[in-house]
Length: 118
Image (cartoon, rainbow, N blue to C red; front, side, top):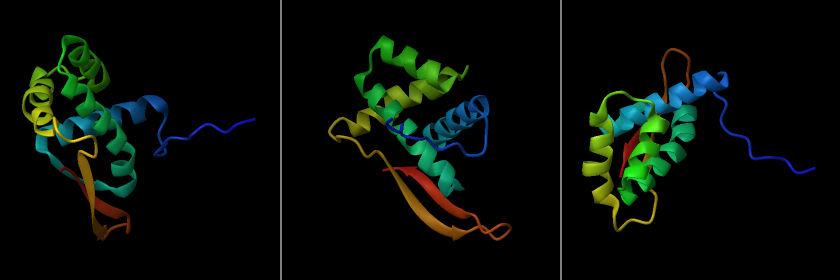
């Protein structure tokens, strides 16, 4: 029996995790750099990469898919993703984000990082 690739669970049930990842994606698109825990950054990085790749296509179907993933009523985030962020990466074949380590958080020593667009 083959093992399936496991995703980051982040100690949350599936609905909470999906909402968390969508919200983190929205924040990265909105602010282009967020400070978060290393585990959350590693979990959201593939999601934001997929969204930018989708935005590079730029058609109506891609917009609807992105809207469905983000579950966000504000169209400004989708507009920014498709009209401002995606055109920057037309020549780049992936690797749109980077994780910069900041060191442990003082309260609970959790590794903190910046997740930012390259």
